[in-house]
Amino acid sequence: MRYLKTRFLPLSAVLCASLAAAGDPATKPNFDDLFGMAEAHAIEVFGAETAQCLSHALEDFNLALSGKDPVNSKSPAFPQLLDGGTTFWDGACYKLTIFKSLTTYRLADGSLVNGYVVGPSLQLHFSPSASRPQPIARTRFVFLERRAAT
Image 1 (spheres, rainbow, N blue to C red):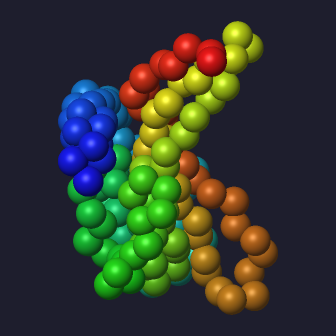
Image 2: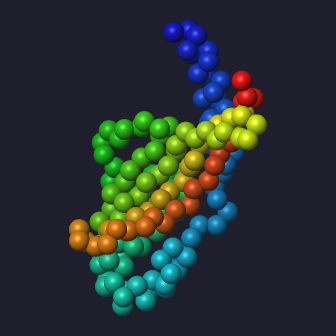
Image 3: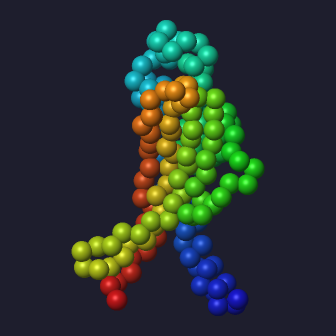
C-alpha cells in the first residue's frame, strides 16, 4: 500500500497542477456563437420555452469551461468516474458531458504522451423522436508527461 501512495501522490500533484495551468479559456461563447442565432431570434424559431432552455445550456456550458459545476442541469447522485473524472449532466433540452478523460497518444518513435482531454460537450435533445444530435464541444488536451519508448 505504501508503494501505491508514493507512486500516486506525485502523479496526482502533477495532474492538479496541469489542470490548474490549463486555466480558464480566453473566450466563452455567447448565444450566437453556440447556436448560430441571436437569442431574440431563437424565441421566434424555437419558441420561448426552448429558447430559455438553450440559454440555460449556454450558461452550463460556460460554467463547465470555467471548471465549475452546471447550475441548470442535474447529474446522477453517484456518477461513475471510470476514465479520470468525466461527468454527465441532464438539462430539460440538452445533455452536457464534462470530459476529464485520461488519454495516451503513441508517437511515431514509440514514445507515449500522457494527459487528459478536458472540456464540455453539449448535445441538444428537443424531443424523443428528434434526429440524432451532433455534439457542440470545446475540449482540449492537457499534457502530463512523455515516456520514452521501451
